[in-house]
Image (cartoon, rainbow, N blue to C red):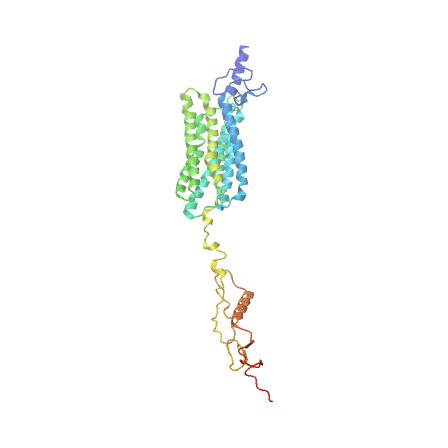
Length: 409
């Protein structure tokens, strides 16, 4: 019986690692059902407060991230700023990696086992490097926009972020394969869960380099008047993430050992992951979504190349008006009828002022417009001859004019 109890304790010891000492009893803790595996007790044990709190915060983060992703996609038709529209892909990628961080939090709440430990080690650096790579490319776009007046296209930024993220994927994959291969066949020790804390931190050096690059890249963009807020959001996110990383690394390597609570390693990582994921949402994603639908101030004053119809194009500046000669009414003395003669000279042709050369203005009058203009001009200059009565013989009873010859008697 003594041998059986010793074997049972040695077999179940890795499964019951948690921040607080547990009594190795077969009964489920308060809040957990009897059918639940012992490795998930931290998710439902009412005596393990940190597990339930972190679990609730992570679940709320998943729901919030999904809602923000829907809002981001629904805002695309209303985005009028083409430059901000190119950043939507990076912001959506940050949301996807943030959801992964909230999901990774559950892996640190449950007790350690072989698959869970490998998942922690691989996804921790991969998910953080994805978020930081997107932030770094956004900061690089702001710097290039300030210096050259325009930044790279959105697909180029996505390719850059993908390349930075794949570097960490390759590093973690290689490290995971090496540690798994080193495990002796049939050995009692599983290197997936027995990795030293210092080794776990050293495997994240590339992620730390990305974090420092995000902070440094966001500083020059603060001088840009229009994009100052975007640079401030990236800088605040980078600084807050840097503070979280310094805190959890110190606690993970030295703090828990000095306080005599080495079992607090998992809660330390879980709190660090969930708090950093919320920092990505509050300090970067939500402010950027709020600025997404704002209009571009540069579009309010477009350049000359976008003037399709300048004000001068609405004037017929290529039709020259000829001076109109004064009207001269030709009247005949001693005649009852006279004819108003048209002005001397040939009327100007509607095509006279049109030299056939192209003008710089966008609008060119058609032949119909020229003819109509010419006819209007001729209407003012030409008069139809008509007969007018100037005077009648006063006191006479007949209406014969002075110029009429007397009939023979």
